Length: 93
Length: 93
Image 1 (spheres, rainbow over the protein chains, first blue to last red):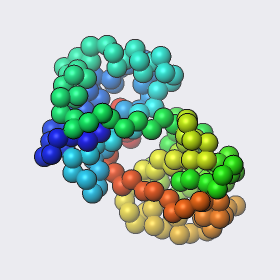
Image 2: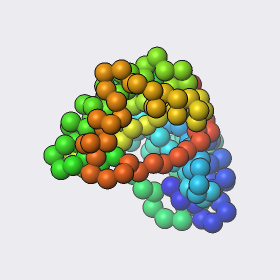
Image 3: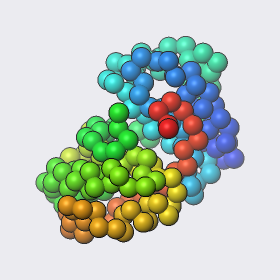
Image 4: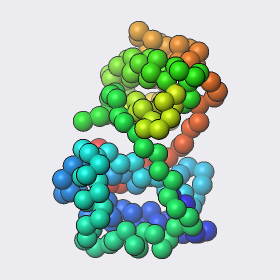
């Protein structure tokens, strides 16, 4: 996700609050917020969900302290999504 | 990473053998091989390392059954790297 210029840290902070709201979400195996090493307004979220339904359910629900709307306001454009199927390797639960 | 046309599954299989060779590597917290949902020749590796030195050391070493050279032969071009700093969230050790 790319924030409006200068808003990368605010975007990361908001996403960290979203992540906190997902700690108990069923089917949420990972939701890690990452800062880009060379693009200060870019934030990557690496998510692992048990299935698409778990993701849809959790992210459309009230996320507690912060909602997705608060994230969308900070974005310079629509988020880029990379849809992956994990195959294996160390660190995968 | 993008494989030569039709070689996506071979690339994933080779990377899974690299991943197996990294299970005991010091500082390797994650090395997960992922298939792209919509690009059959594209494979993403999501890696988490304790520090850059741990990554350099492990990936330049003999990886056991398979080496990085075997991976490079399957690639259609240089791998795209996204360098990130994880900030927090569920699923991060």
